[in-house]
Amino acid sequence: MTKVAELRGQTRDELGEALTKLKKEQFNLRFQRATGQLESTSRVREVRHDIARILTILGQEARGETVSAKGEPSEHGKSKKKAVKASAEKKTEKKPAKRAAKKKE
Image (cartoon, rainbow, N blue to C red):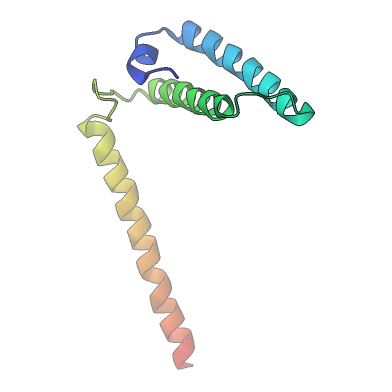
């Protein structure tokens, strides 16, 4: 299992190489599981989680999000999430009003 702090210290090229390596390992593990040769079933989950970590870091870098040492988004990233949540709440507030109007008819 790879730690997030170690991954954040790597360049995009290094992360891309690690991602390729993990995807090949994931393929081999799936093949071993299908043929009944897989001994360490927990490794499948570890590889899947490592792939997700790398993709998350690459996505954050692509969006230009700054990330703290703990791996949490900065205040800028949080305010954007709040704005999205607020707009989603506005959309959901309209739906019950329409349903109530239909029931009255």
